[in-house]
Image 1 (cartoon, helix red, strand yellow):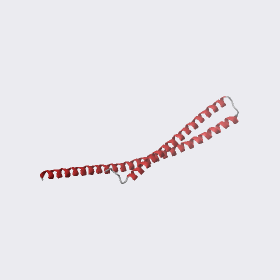
Image 2 (spheres, helix red, strand yellow):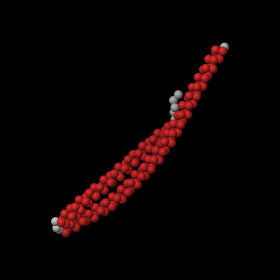
Image 3 (tube, one colour):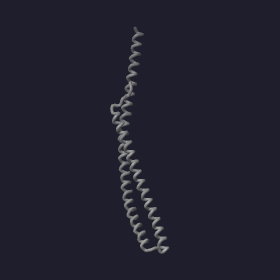
Image 4 (cartoon, one colour):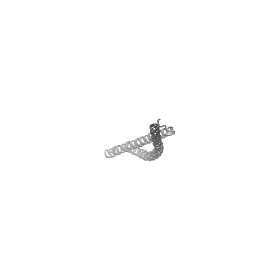
Length: 147
């Protein structure tokens, strides 16, 4: 006789929920990394334009060109500020997904532990049943020898 857990579908569901939560966390981490790479790119662009601006000023470039470059730096500063906000949001999302995953992991552990306990009880009852059958066979043999 094999062990069959009555709530196996629940255990499977909890495992699937945990896997889905892992995917969601992975996705949130990917988004955070993408936002951080974007910030790095914006910061690099700003550094490059600042260097160009410095060179333009040293080479006495037309004021219109210098002003245009300064406006682009201001635009990049706004983009960088927005990107910091995006990164904070993405980080909050990662924390939320980590919390959800922790909850799913704990939930799955509870169900797996219940399954293990039920399986242990099943095995103990099977051992007891087998022992009772052996005892009964020994009793019958002993009774047969007595006759």
